[in-house]
Image (tube, rainbow, N blue to C red; front, top):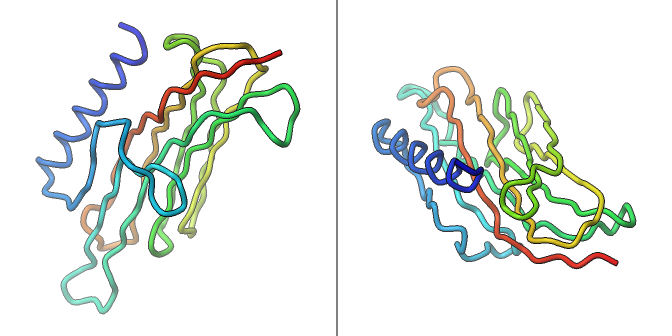
Length: 166
């Protein structure tokens, strides 16, 4: 089974977890989801509710894998980023970005973990070789104590992009 098949199985399992847990979500396994106003696709959006007696607001977090592209910072490389973005600071965010070439070749991966923040980003980059590139991400959000759910793990696959290298 190649990584694309595994990704679809992972997306289906993730959707099942969302349904079974009763989360508010706009999760979709469709990589052609329209971009948000900043041009980034958002595949997974999860919301955690505060304790009933708290005066705190719900916290919504979005996980996204972005378009692979030629790096503008490091000549001769291909780059992909993945982000968690939350409406308020959370206890912890973990995010892994993976860059794939021609469906089954893992080029590179990057990991990041933050505590007490509302955003986390990971990057993956590799040398430029002509091919079809896509990025994937997996990450976990740990909401503040008392929020329901306490944690949520998500997965996203970005769009495939043909990139030509000299």
